[in-house]
Amino acid sequence: MQKIAIIGAGRVGESTAQFLARRDIAREIALLDVREGAAAGAALDIQETAPLLRFDTRLTGSHEASVIAGAELVIITAGLPRKPGMSRSDVLDKNVEILDVILQDILVHAPQSRILVVSNPVDVLTYRAWQKTGWSRDRIFGQAGVLDTSRMAAFIALETGLSTHDIQALVLGGHGDAMVPMLRYSSINGVPLDHFMDQATLDNIVERTRHGGAEILALKQTSSAYGAPAAAIAEMVEAIALDRRRVLPTVALLDGEYGERDVAMGVPCILGQGGMERAIELELNAEERAAFDRSIAGVRKDLEHLA
Image (tube, rainbow, N blue to C red; front, side, top):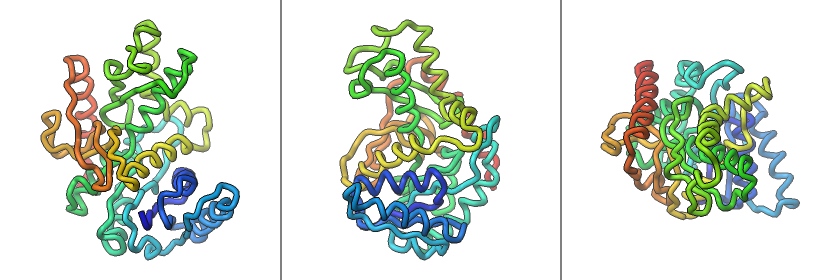
């Protein structure tokens, strides 16, 4: 990939630039932030690690939107962050305002790009980006499931003491307290999780996964998570930039999958050079379907706020 743009040079945006630069999968990474000097400073700081970390990616930064010109992929991390006690929905109205301005900049300077939405509430903002641009759904998608799945896998590893290399996990639904950790589709090197843990332990892992971001926020107080989100973004970007066609949980615009339309929701998708190439519909049992429906209902309630 020739150029990737990151809008928002806060902790998540800067960490994302670091992860992507180290993977050396783009010739250029451009950071944009409304705070004068913030993006340029972050870009220069990362650039100075290139000889030590051995990457050739060039980083630039600016408060001028023209810095994203020609980007093939735009990652949106800008927005009002949560504070302790706040839900992702609590920042909805302000972040919709911010997103609308960003989308105008993208339409002017990177009209051929694909958009990866990270800002919260990501399901609603991904839908908003699709709604405002009028682009096809393969070009607009969101990051949540890769992060939530990584958290679930980490908690499984901590509980069992087994290697993270062997843990496969999956989380569907909205990125919030109603997300749907899929125990039936998770395993340790193909062995079902209930071979290693009792149901009470599995239930605790599900709940900790649902509140993984809030747990970090409560501990840090002055900052939400940024390391794990940035690593999750990098995983998705590499799948696209290198056309790996990986199956990763992604916030996608549904078009009949799971019997739903006109909503963005986290489901397994094929990510490759074409962007979100296909949403994969899993067979859900009654319990999973009920949880998925609750998650959908929560996202649709937030969508009612959109003008």
